[in-house]
Amino acid sequence: MKGMHEERADTRYGTESRAQLILDVAKAAGSHLELAEVLEALIAALRPTSRFDAIAVSVIEGEYARLHSLHLERVGRRPGESVESVLARAASSVHLPPNPVKQLLKDHHISAVASSLEPYVCTDLRLEKRFPLDEKMLQYGVRSYVSLPLLKRGALLGAVDFVSFEQRSFDQGEVQLLQDVSEIVSIAVSNALAFEEIKALKEQLQAENRLLQDEIVQRSIFEEIVGSSQSLRRVLTSIDRVAPTDSTVLITGETGTGKELIAHAIHRRSPRSGRALVKVNCAALPAELIGSELFGHEKGAFTGALQQRIGRFETAHGGTIFLDEIGELAPEIQIALLRVLQEKEFERVGGNRTIHTDVRVITATNRDLQREVNEGRFRADLYYRLNVFPIHSPSLKERSDDIPILVDYFISRIATRMGKRIGQIDRRALDAMQRYAWPGNIRELQNVIERGVILSDSEVFRLEPGTLPESSQNGQELPAPESANARDQQARIEAVLRETRGRIAGPDGAAARLGIAASTLESRIRALKINKHQFQGRP
Image (cartoon, rainbow, N blue to C red; front, side):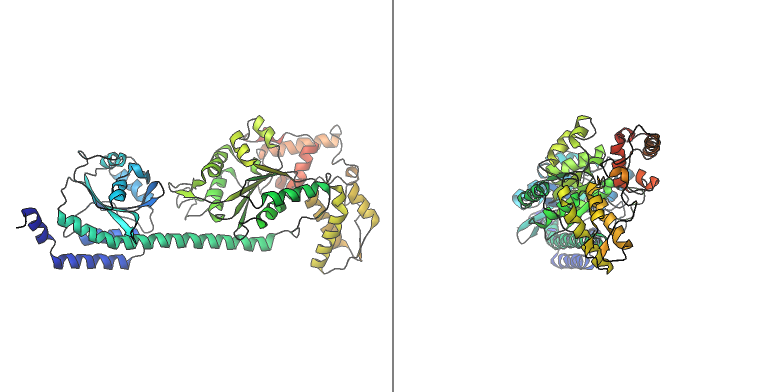
């Protein structure tokens, strides 16, 4: 003979009503793509027989349990609203502290579900607090809950929690009903996770396609490393040795020496060559936006963040990220980058979800980072993480033997592109180019050649008079600092650096205000022995 409790269970959850409820839940799960909408429909379907104040779905991610989706009866969910936003509004409405979205698995009651794959029932949190999360749930006003496993082909995805703000005893029939319902929720969760993964891969693919299109449009004609000097051969040997590894590479050298080409060569020769090489110029981005650019941001994270955006590290997942002008990073971004290098994880700006990344990092700088560390402008721990395999990109002064080869290479490529035939190089032009100091290095040489090809009206390449400053023919970039002209120039550059707080590149940088290339300004700063770092951060 059945006990009284079991009789009540049978009456309340009869076969027909149970079947109809499960059918309603299945219809709800099939009618909505977003899991939060499924939970909302689920709580409505359960309301006639079993009332709950909230339903939450947590998924297992390694050693953590992440709150994936949530429906609270007292807080209506807005279309497309994140879990974090729902929790924040819920906390505000009932004057509670914000709830963590992510917990260690051992601190979460999901660990009890994971160990047994059976429902975990808590009838009174005041008396049955077994996990650290229980204390936080009690602060929210939760008094009782049933947590059920979400399984896919026998593997545990996570758990669904049916939550009440009142003390309750859950009879056998009610738990069995919720268990039947959880099997349908498992399908919805599995679909939602698959949809998330497909969406993330689609976003990454779209971002990679945009980068590849930009690469085709913007990529310089200097696509290969050209030359045969001993210093260049050392670089090529280093590339061949480090490319097959995943080691972090730090490329140093003056502006315009082709550091980006070295990064390209490393990526093309690496096992990651099938994925994107994502480039970021750290000097060209405002300090307040570089965090969003590197790590992405959530919708509403700051003014103007109208939608979620994935950052460059997410785009580069499985590939390589090239951080140019790494010495320009602000201290707070240096800390975030150090975490990515050490832990292989980060959060988007304004988000709480930890994102794991598999990215090879290559950096470049024209600064002496060791000196920057000694003077307290660059973190020592980050420098040691970046300087795993250093490669020095030689200046044209260090590889002057390559100048004739480079001149011939550029003339051939540029003339072909412009539809001109140039078969000879004027000897005086070549001598002048070999005597010139090339403060802008290969980039400056390329620009000079392009200008000469444009002006050429014969098959002989010549340089127009005044193309190369005579003062630089003997290796002097500018008049000596003692001259009045140099002093005036120094005062003007320092005034503009003071206005831009030491920023050289970018639309608001000193180079743009002076109307010259950033590489040219860097060369003049070095020639005049100006300490540009003294202006950084000054109002």
